[in-house]
Length: 133
Image (tube, rainbow, N blue to C red; front, side, top):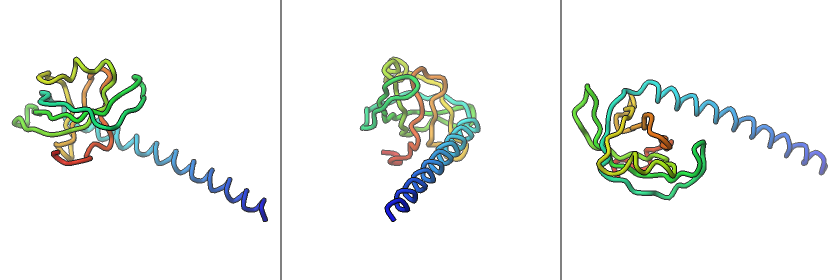
């Protein structure tokens, strides 16, 4: 009987790991598709505040930063929005208050703003932690 429980546990573990790996891959595909469909624009950093999330990714250690941006492109008037980006240790000069940066504006929700070619900066998925806070 103990062997049966052990085998069931191992099978459940492998099933979970298989499901998790497929879900993660699917989530990345969806995120990449959303970024690709987003419109190019510009943004001015109005404020930035480090928030709780820290971690490590492709460019080393990062800190999640809550940014207030003024965003626009050739199809929109400037508007303000809050977003969350993961900023690496070398990102500071690129996203300091007053800086103008290239961004992508989500095709479905103009309040989702992706950084575009900003060194050591990436969008923090999911970023809609608190809408306009």
